Image (tube, rainbow, N blue to C red):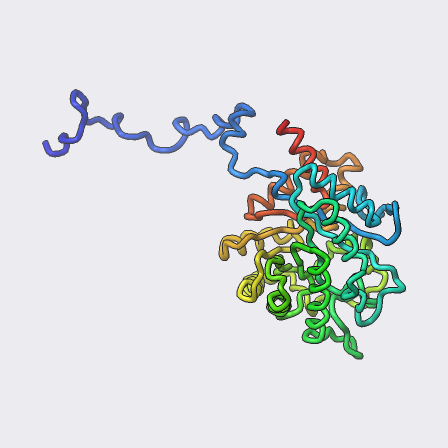
Length: 352
């Protein structure tokens, strides 16, 4: 009789009064897929304009634009046109743009001294954008490859080795002129050991405490970077490869160690680059650290998709958004992508 104490009055203890075991037909996972409103209602991962960072390339001159042949639809822009691009981005609600300079060849040198010229192309672009569009965030790349005549991210010894500690001094100087120009986020992409701590300390010591650091924490020695090197003009100058400082493509635990160090040294945000081939790294870092974590959909990923779209092999409207959703689903808080402006327009039009 004790078994019947909590049963509702008038019911019998039968097998049918228990909750049905999960499974078909009681569970039909297709039910929520039947209508657009229902799919939207239960969607686990969404992409918004707030998730987008737009990288743009800067060239010297005025009212000047140049197509990047290996990146269909992407152009290098003079500073005045970069300001207009920033205005377009702000109108669409894009939170941040990142500027990458294509430094004239006569200003490139072995020591990358143009990187810390306060009137270099990147700094001029930052000042112009912040003056015209003060509410948009501006991010700057911290690395020497756009400024060296050998195309590497660091200084070289006479026998061709990357000089880690000597490079840190130059990166600090580069960071400070960018901060002085008004840069909101510094993105060290050089992969030198200790650069996050060194740059953070320099910012603290010079009253730039509020400048944020988005570390290129897990930047792999990838074959997907070549179109970017075309865009910034370093592909023709690069001697050798970057495998002694960028990460080995087979390593995952090492990315965790890199993230631990960068976070301890003062990174506000961390990044995985490239994106799709290293989406497992993105998931692992976000899961383990819970830090603001970003993915860079790099030039080769962009060009690969665009080539297929232009040839009619893929539906651009579908696969571009699908690729960006993949980053969000893996844990990305945001995505650096050359599709940012077009994607923002589509998302805004859909929202009405």
